[in-house]
Length: 496
Image 1 (cartoon, rainbow, N blue to C red):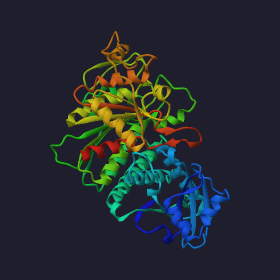
Image 2: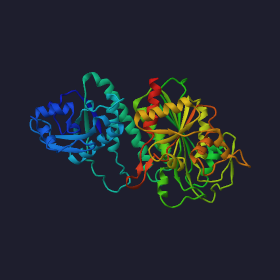
Image 3: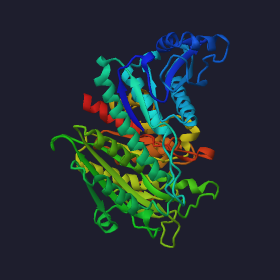
Image 4: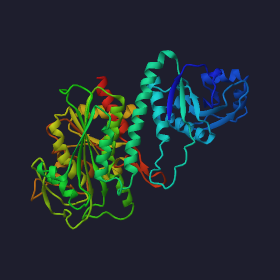
């Protein structure tokens, strides 16, 4: 979808559709009042007789309004002005997308200044609208036979603003477009089946991402190279798969070489059977989404590259399958990680932390300003938080606070769980330095405790996205989260 800026007056609108907001009870926006005057009270008469109340998400499409050159006017309800917030605003934008998709209109004009949203400026409203509409425009049809149907929805949206706001509005659109592109890449990778999206496929996609991008460089390590680096923990997971594991490094160099990079580490288990600790069959197909952490790293780097940000960012992706082959790691096996610490594997279905720990040790070679790992790590995070926020933990208060603020800023929410030393006791092993699981209690926290043992040399935060990376049921599919959160964090670091 294309987003443009215009500086026209509401009563002179032309084109396929003009979007006018209505709040409860039956109150036209400022732009709507001007359009109503041009139509000699046509809109006010409709409201007066009760055709449109203005409830949140309510829409009414009006073709050929008298006195106007525009082909259609779409009235959209915003609810009570006193109750307008970010969630209501998102519902309004989604209602616009749905109504216009059904209308046949290819272009439309929208007046963001007509909606008053406490604590949010015009640039935020434009960026959030563009990002929401871009997300609603996403389709995954790569695996269907035949030629995909041509999408008949909205193709172009014009934000009508004052000329003095043009620079900030343009920047907001650019950011939204880049984040949307990154989310689409992450969703594509997540939605692909595991027989297509293998570790080697992710490596090829990373290489393709860097093709023609001067600031991006990709390096892919094979299993032999990982063995030389003594990544025994990561390789213990790939041992049962016929698909070779890959350790993918993507470097974005937008600043001087001496500037320490932000390092993003994404879990890339392209399919997780649980290994010898086999998962139940129900909904196992959704384990193709177990590489959504890796997908979010690629998506974020795509957004950063598209924006050409003056900062250094490194993505590290350990990619593997977790399969129950005859050579697969068994419960009770002990492996040695790249850090030299030994791990007793009590459950092979706790494999994400086994590949991440070696990747986190490897991340230290970049002398990072901070490291953020992203993983669909535990079902326990869904029990604790549901599917609205991702969980966050870490070893640096400032980093965690910054991430939480970024989540609020871009509506990609996260919630902190405690990472107290008392939880570390649950990982004790009599035969190794640690066990890979800590029992039933506080499963999300003990998983983070495990990772914390490999991140002592730098500032680190862990995002558990098991509840937010994809949706189940009729809406099944990857969400592209937390690409918005990660991109916002990087943008804020640039602005600092």
